[in-house]
Image 1 (cartoon, chains in turn red, brown):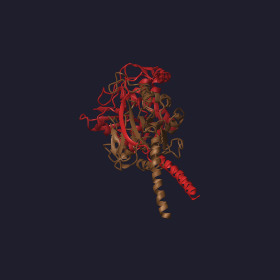
Image 2 (cartoon, chains in turn yellow, brown):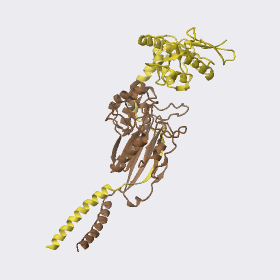
Image 3 (tube, helix red, strand yellow):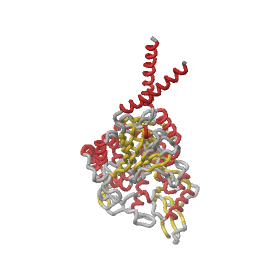
Image 4 (cartoon, chains in turn orange, green):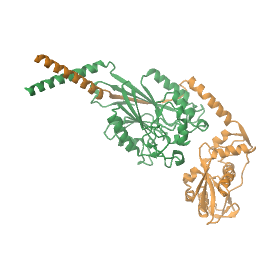
Length: 260
Length: 304
């Protein structure tokens, strides 16, 4: 009797132990990470083009190409940001077009008129070649998603803007402003806003990109804006809308920085 | 007497323990297991390959070729995980025209498992991202973006656990500071939380509680900032945390020749890999596991 009872105990222990061991071996780290291998695989022409993916992409691609390549206007002279010391035709095109397209929106919303447009030379990403102009042209000259914003600056900030232009010596796109220089090309004689002398105490409305308004290209004078108006209008869409409106792209050569 | 009995029983139970341990390990026929991680980052809507006359990346990249490369590996390997470290959106007209639909559909066709969110994935706003999610048959993870007061609440989760061949893999996401990088209008009420602190919580959950065999961080923090050495990055993340096995990075478009090894807070190795951008490279990391106890005390052999 005693023996049987003892055996039963052992069996019970065995079951408990087995269960415990099973749980323990499941929970304990039985997966030892003992080796790691790593490398980069260059995706190049040695790999085949997956037919399923290629066929799937095709209609999307065709639609985009058709849309991007439809002719919107004609450009008689190549516009190039590398041709010009104080201004370029494409720079003038950027600033004048943006001002022209934005003013009606700003006037409608705020009943105010924008005085100046300033953009950056580095933001012009391609030439506008002589020939047909398409939506693709707009993507090439402006691949970024930047939107335009109207800033509220006083005359002192505008004077700083003029100083920046002369020190930076880059043909940044400008419209609505003229900076007159001495022959030394360093000293500012006077500044005109829409043919009127700059008034240090007056408030001016300045159109720029959100990139520059947020401190891009170190145009810190833009940071003194007392009020910003987002136009929710992408710079690229400004150009696309303009291309759709006109037949021929103008060649704008009027100087904005003038040596007297 | 009773005491003697107890000792006897203990002796016999330890005998049982070691015996059953032995039997159990001999029951498992497969002693080594292999997990293959494939990954991309910053593909930026690059669906077509670069043109053959491209000055920097001639004929490189392309979704259809990447799919072929992945397919070939899937034929050879049983346990493949395909991951992405963010910035899927923005970079070609495919994004401007379709808002990310095609990117997500192609990644679904390639059977991506998990991705994290990069700053450019907010480019059409948090609503624009949300609108494309039905096209993604994979999950997004982000642990340090608090989406509580946004449309993504409960949709983008902090981590995901995947089991492959009995190996438990925990994957969590970390994103870059959005303020100053992305317009507030786009990310709305998304709150950025300290990545190091969150990584601490995540590894606690994944390693200590969930007992994951492998912990992977999908990071869009950036590899390293030489001009701002204090700025949180993958290298600092690796050094300041523990229990992360692999950091798959993004954001800085860093083309590493091969994955690098950093030492974590516990003196353990952490792998970091980033494959540049635009789908030019695909990263591959193979993890080998063994149930053999003699590996218990051994350090990992890392072959790069």
